[in-house]
Structure formats: C-alpha cells, structure tokens
Length: 83
Image 1 (cartoon, rainbow, N blue to C red):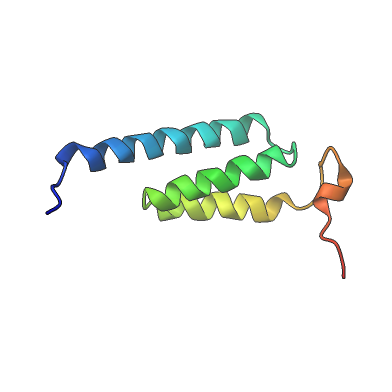
Image 2 (image 1 turned 90 degrees about the vertical axis):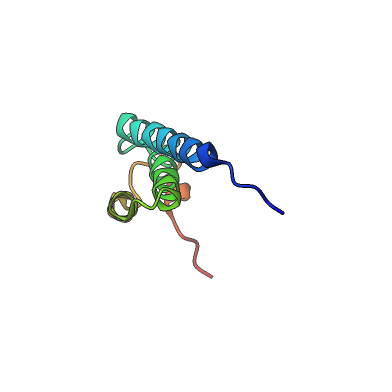
C-alpha cells in the first residue's frame, strides 16, 4: 500500500519552478546567442509543462520558433540538412 507524502508535491513544484526560472534567466542572458538560447527556452518550456503553466510554456516555444536559424556560432547548427 502506497502512502502519500503531503509535502512531496509542494516540494517538487518548488523545484520545477526554480528550474524554470533558472532557464528563463539563462535565455534572457543569452538572447540571440544560438544554440544556448533555444536550449534554455526549450528547458523553460519543459519546466512550465511539468508545472502546468501553459501560457509560459507556449510563450517559450513561440520564442524558439521566432528565433529562427540566425546567430549560431557555427552556422551549420542552424541548418536542417536536406536529404
């Protein structure tokens, strides 16, 4: 029989929110510095998804989509190879 730990959900929510805030800060500090910018935004979106913060998740994913394929230190990282 499984037992419930009342503080566990609250604790994990706090951890997820802290991670989301960290990824948001990293994205802000690295705006237009690819690929770290996209990486930070994608991780922010995952944290928001886990924390059930849909608007933050959608905003982060929208920013990734709008970032495009420019500003990569290695331009080949911004290209999707053709077959």
